[in-house]
Length: 212
View 1 (cartoon, rainbow, N blue to C red):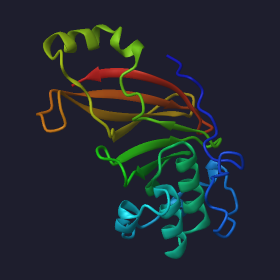
View 2 (spheres, rainbow, N blue to C red):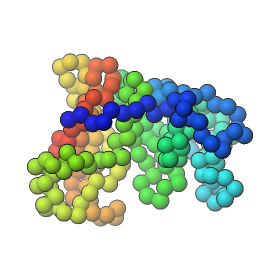
View 3 (cartoon, helix red, strand yellow):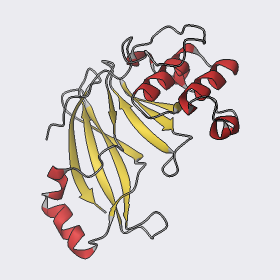
View 4 (cartoon, one colour):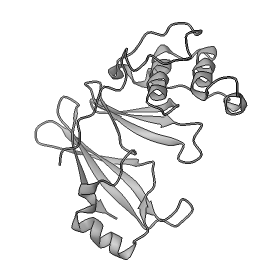
């Protein structure tokens, strides 16, 4: 089950963020440079939430620079802002030749964290952006669950739960997303999804495995 090919997430074009001309130039980083160096230990952003003098993404980047954030962290935040999702990389976990970046979105009202599955070729998949796809809804697994829980939906973020190997040198990464009818409601189940990573570290396939 192939998903739409991911696109390079960071690059010179996408990092051209308006409103930052007053800040020192930051070298654009390709996404494959996103690793532990892209993590920014969050500082207070209360001023960014209350000020009306500048946009929140501009304020975030200014705060990061003043705190001494690494160029990789600032480049990642610029890429997120350019995509309309102001935030920063708050954690990094290597998963073989791929990696999992935890993203904090400090200005959202709900769901302040997300995850990007980063391939070795510099592409990223937002595993929380579309957790329940049309092909998932067409499976007997989902239809059976939905019949018993008609109001239940996935609530991000997904959690990494394990790895399975494959005979060709690659592996699959398993993620679980809770299913419930509202943020405060009890969990009805969990959506278990696998992402196939080839031996080069590139994400190839996504598949709904089960609902537990």
